[in-house]
Length: 128
Length: 317
Image (cartoon, rainbow over all chains, first blue to last red; front, side, top):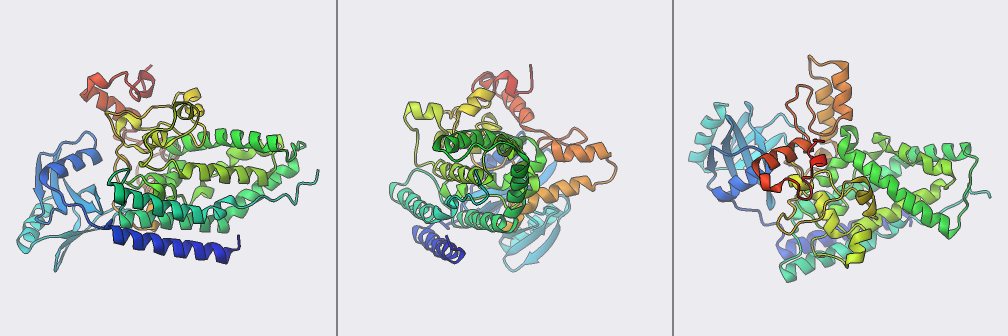
């Protein structure tokens, strides 16, 4: 197959799939409650059990204390990711906080937080 | 027979329209039936970007593998020709080769660094099949195909059957199909068997490496059947938090280099960081799949001895 034809198939295919996913509503993010956050955290960190969970009001993130460490949990699409916090850089934004992590895969985590939450979360994270 | 001009169709490129159509059909089925899997826009687009990058890396770096094979072809005195039975035998033997490369891909971190991206989606649908590596050339796993060339299978034929193998594996990345007929499940790799392979449940770690024929897992003791009471939870044991294809493609390579350059470790440790299974740490703080299985059975003793938790999988004798 000529490379231009392969390229055309790929471009048209990607656009068609993206449009279909938007039409079907496959871009709605997950919203968590505390029980769901606990389950997701334990699934992503085998052997660790949360001692304390602080949910963001948006249901899109949580701070999780487990085994003496503070972890951040955040929604990625319809799933979550978690990361232990080890003195991250904290950058305030208009919509919450950005945390910079020492991780090539996830160097920045954007957290949507209410203004009163942002200050509380900052204080908690700064203790790590 | 002069086979220097032997060519076969580029079946993977020819299959691209089929891949696109099948993805659209699967996601529409899930939308209508409200079952049979999940789609998420950014996850799926990341998978597709990885697929495009895989094709691009093949165009850019394919000459390395093909050049290596042609060098071997010039050395070997054997030539099995191009009969249909030779192609069929090549397909079966190349699937055995695939089993071992795939097993190395989960048990040797250097190879895992390339393969990890395929498991980095928390979804399991047809786009996951296309979440392919960009860095396979750097694993040097083309060496595992060397015996096929030296036995007299032409390199073009080997790459052709490898393409067929890849196409076969596309359709098994789905939750829309539950089980195939029993005879088929017994011999062939199926959606059910491969869901197990993508599960991060302790029971399912390091199982079902097959490409086309599941018999290899049954022969070499790595087969675990899908359990009704333990549905696969897809993704990595600890998921990466990104949809960025560049980070998906390179994160484990970067992790290896960071481990190499940490102070206070020996050259032996550095070697082991590349060749030991994922999760290994020089100070003993890491934990591979055996440890995760052991800890699960310790917390759930009733699971001991059930599929995926047999003694030989727990690292005990």
